[in-house]
Image (cartoon, rainbow, N blue to C red; front, side):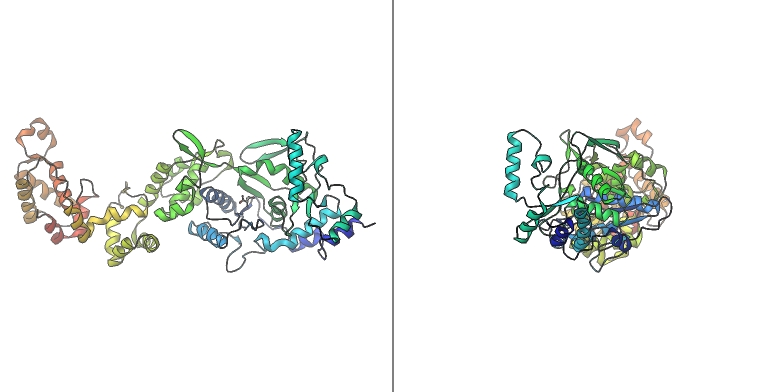
Length: 549
Ligand code: GLU
C-alpha cells in the first residue's frame, strides 16, 4: 500500500517539499517600520491597459511613499495566453511612465534577490509548496479530464446546484492511494487540486484596505493548484510568490475579490500570514449618461498606447490617474505650487468605491496644466523623442532650429498664469505652424480671417504705417504704445469707453486694430501673446506679413 510520501514522490520526483529550504532561499526582508512591499504582476497577454497602469501606479506610489519595495512580476503561467514580447512591452511602457521597479524581471536579467520574477521560471518553487500540501493531505492528485468536468457541470446544472469541483462532485478527492499510484504509473494525465476544508455555508471575512470589512461565502472548491503542464494556477502562484517575495500589500483589480477566500485558505494551510489586500476599483467611463467599464474594443483610451501615440506627457497621465485615485488630489494640486506627484500622500481610505471614472476632458485639463509648467530645451528634447516615432513633420521642424522651436512653444510660460493652449504633443504642430514661413504661406493661401467690417484699403494703409513706425524692440509697452499711436492716427479709438459711446465716429477700437495685426501675422484671430510672436519672427518677416499680397 503506497504512502502519501510515495505518491508525492511519484508525481513530483526529486522535489524538496520542505518549506524551510524555501524560507532560507527567500529570507524575510529587513524593512524599516511602515515600509510596504508591493507589486505589479501583469500577465504578458498584450499591451498595457489604462486600468493596469492605474494598478501599477498605486502599487508604486505606496512603495515609494513608505520607503518600501516595488516589484514587477511577470505572471505567465497561462502559457496559451502568453504573447511573445508582451513582457518587454509592458515593462517598457511602465518605464516610459517613470514607474521604475525596484525589483523584478528585466529583459537584461532579474533585479533583486527574490527572483526569478517570471512565474514560468519558478516551477520548482511551486512544486515544493504543492508537495508540502500533498504530504500534509491538503492536496490530492486528480484525474478528471475536461470531458469529466463537463459531465459534472451538466449534472450540477440539472440539479440546480453550484457548478464546480467540490463536495460530492470532487470525484477524486478520496481515491485510494493504490489507485492513484496505478493510474499515474499507467500514464493517465493528472492535476493537483487543493483539498478545501471550507464550508459552503460558512463565511470568511477580511479587511480590505479600500473597502473595509468584506464578508464572503467560505470557499469549498477544490481548485486546481498545479496544472498538467507543471505550472500553478494564478491562485496558488499568488500565494506562494507573495509570501516568498515578502509582499505586504497586494493591490489588484476588484475582479479578484471573490477569489480572496480561497487565497486566505491557502495562506493558512501553508502556515503563512496573508498579506493585506487592496482591491482597486475598475476604471469606468460615462457613455451617453451610463457608466460602463472602459472597453478595449470601443475606447482607444483603454490602452496606454493611445496616450503615447497622442503625445500626452507621461507625467500628465499619471497626475490624471492620481486624481481618479484620490478625491483630494486635485485640490492638493491647486494648493501646492509646483507640485511633484511623489509628494502627494496617497491613501487607500480616500479611494472612491463606485468605480473610478475616466474622463478625457479632465485628462486634457490636467495635461494642459502639467505642460504649461514645462519649458526649455528639456521639453524640446521630449517632444523631439515623441515626434521621432509619431510625427516626422514635427521632428523636421524641430530639427531645423531647436532653439527657435523652443521659443515658439515657450511663449507666455514665464507668466504666473502660463499659456495652456496645448494638452499634448500632437496639438503642438498646428499651434506653431504659423511660425514657419512655408506653413504660413499655406495658411495664407486659404484666406486670412480678417473682420469683414474693414475694407482692404484701410487694412493696407494701417499695415503700411505699422511697417514704417511700429516699435520692434523688446519692450512690450513701447510696442503697444506705437501700435496705439498708429491706430489712433488712422481713426481708431484708443479708449474703448469713447468708442462705445460713439462707435460711428471711429474706424474701430484697439481690439480691432490688434485683431487685424494678429490675423496678418499669425493667420488666426487667436494667438499667443502678439508682442512675443513679433519678437520671435523678427522685423523683416513681420513686415513681409504686413503686406496684403
Ligand atoms: N496576473 C494577474 C492579473 O493580471 C495579477 C493579479 C494580481 O495582481 O494579483 O490580473
